[in-house]
Image 1 (cartoon, rainbow, N blue to C red):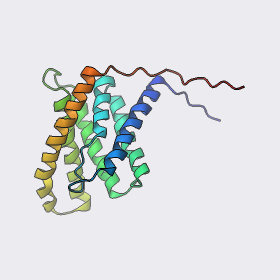
Image 2 (cartoon, helix red, strand yellow; image 1 turned 135 degrees about the horizontal axis):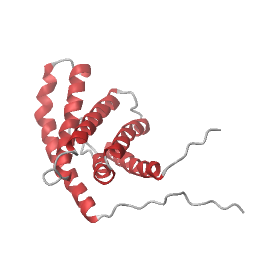
Image 3 (cartoon, rainbow, N blue to C red; image 1 turned 180 degrees about the horizontal axis):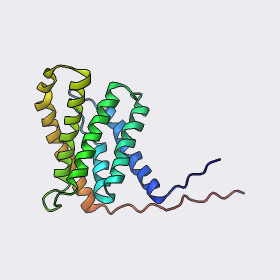
Length: 181
């Protein structure tokens, strides 16, 4: 039997990923005014991880959330999965570049806005290249950009509050021991 060591980092990423997956599932239950317009609640967790633990951890949480969330919602390898993955990848790549910007001017709200716009950009680009091979898809950009502005701002404000008010969680480094009787 192969035993893989589990580190404190692994446990931390798993806990944040579980929270992001829970928000993804909760969001899927919310009614949407138009298909594809969602508040991106799981992105709150990804941005929180980015600000607290760095881009590597945010990358893991973001990608694991897309894969596991799509598996749980029964959308794995469906077009919605690829749209979510394209949006997440575009968002994470944008955040990778944006974390190098001066924190004085680029805090949680501006990072959230950049990620939200990159997310819709990645999704629209994939939709144009694969699902809707017609330039008419770009007529949706103002609608999606407005949603990105609204939800990106709200999510960024939530993250700013969480970073300012809630201390970073301290998780036990080892699981509790099980005593056999």
